[in-house]
Length: 530
Image 1 (cartoon, rainbow, N blue to C red):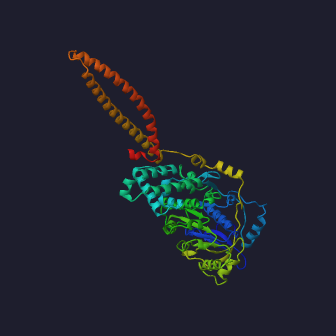
Image 2 (cartoon, rainbow, N blue to C red):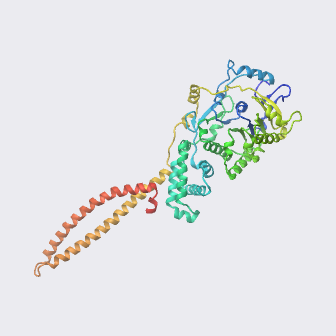
Image 3 (cartoon, rainbow, N blue to C red):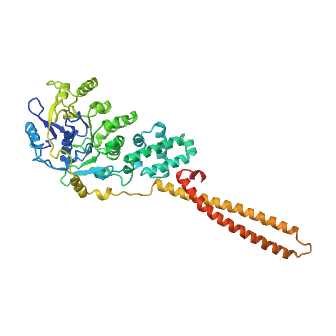
């Protein structure tokens, strides 16, 4: 083999005596999904890098997460003078591969915006199901979250970031009585529990993930000027400290691909390939409803030209309903130290089409680093017979690049202008805050009018009383007009004095009362008073 591509597919590897020569992944079946499994240190990362290189060379854009921080080297050519060149050259000679080194077109992404362009989505785009999974909500809490989303949609309130969702939950709590009659019970304690989980999510970096500009999938599915597919690399070494955020982000990305891409039937090559590293995080403690949804997406998304490849230590990490859909498999060594390990190994061996030349379970135990037991789909989508394979060496650098090299690639990227600066447009938080301010002002003015009317009535009563008292002491023969005029002047003087005092008092009330009303409105009491 002289390159990474064969006439019909991707050259994965081969070998000498006792090994298959060659082994290839047919591009036509690249969207039939796949599995890369094996214990730590058995060569999964090299296999992942090799497949990403080959898909890119075939003009297929790729997404993968750099979980350990060592995949970034794919952006640089391998080093012929490096310490890995000699063992790589020896392996290349064994499998008949003409080893050459080159770099690949890479775009770096990072949820935290430190090692790549920021990746963002909006609360509305994430949706209540994945958001509930992200926050670990129970059934009742998820129900209230669904109500909040429904009301936001009905009222045209855009939920872009965590502030918008908080404001919407406050809106739900303030109108709980009315909402409960229409959608079911909304308890203040439930809303409070969701708010606390939002705080936890924020401390994990969720505030950086939610916002605008949101990631456009079209920007990931681009080609380099030379026609190679762009490799989108997500910096995930820090993200792994929040495994639920990592898994939910990849689920969201998968869901977006499913929803946005058109049906293409059976293309001659995938439109996009998605590598899901540390796949067990997706299914750990996941409710059955979510697993069923992932299974459905995996089954249907291949007709949109998307291939999903799960990378994990043990095939048992992937549910059977999804495992059965993974037609292209690379199984590195599994260690069988315990009874459970033995069962998992036998189960893994049972998932392959047997080869009469060797025992599959023994082969999975025996293969060394850089070797694997492989099975790729053949003509008409038939599973290939299991083979022992030496995986070809990568063309790019094995290991991380330097911060200076990463900075240079980011500076040359065309996506920095679009994604590096956040945009804060009018959304639910601003709209609900404006409503609160308007309602607070209206309530304060109404209270002032009511107080003024009461005071005016009180002043009128006082004037009438004063007038009647004055008449009691009026001389019988005194001119009525003179006495009345004097009484009016006295009454007017007193009325003016009272009005002046009231005006000062009202001004103080408006200054303090409106401020208090506004604060209470933002925190949750305004709409009741309105």
